Length: 244
Image (spheres, rainbow, N blue to C red):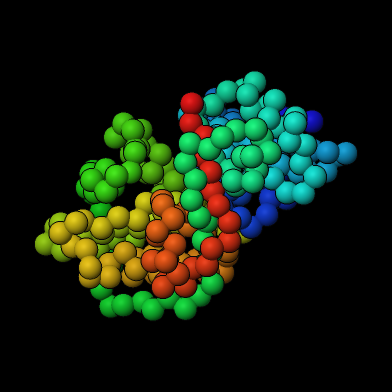
């Protein structure tokens, strides 16, 4: 059975993985009483086995053992979504062919943190422009701003950036901070500042700061797995996104 949750503590069963981090962080940020942010739990024989969240059409699915994938597939199709993110194996079991997929990497320690001065806040418009320049598909700026600020204000996300002479050189986020796991992302370096190790430092700094939890990152493409391996990340699986 799949039902709406009434309290975010109903998600405490979720494992320490990147999808759980995303769902838990969004529940902490928006709560369970907003029409644009909805959270469901699937139970089998009274035991919770999967969670689904949908925020503004973007859906995430996280499963543990014994999830009923036939029911989950029928459910997500019935409630509708614009995009769906899950583990690649889960995506396959749900019956969707991914629009995008690549490696999931987990931080195992050992990042060397340099001495570059880092800031924890900066102009969000500059962040948006840099991410757009580096190929991230962000949609409308106002929607981006509202979502990022909501998570930063709630402490379910954090930013690390390098700014020189009032110019944003690089940025990285702990995008979703759950109770057991953290998902890093939105890592970008201005083309004029590449080759100086900014991205490595920012990601390594965030990973070390959050290392009391499991820390994950979705590679945007397979070739980045080697880059993250040099910082202390290991491949642990594959993420997938299905877009309508």
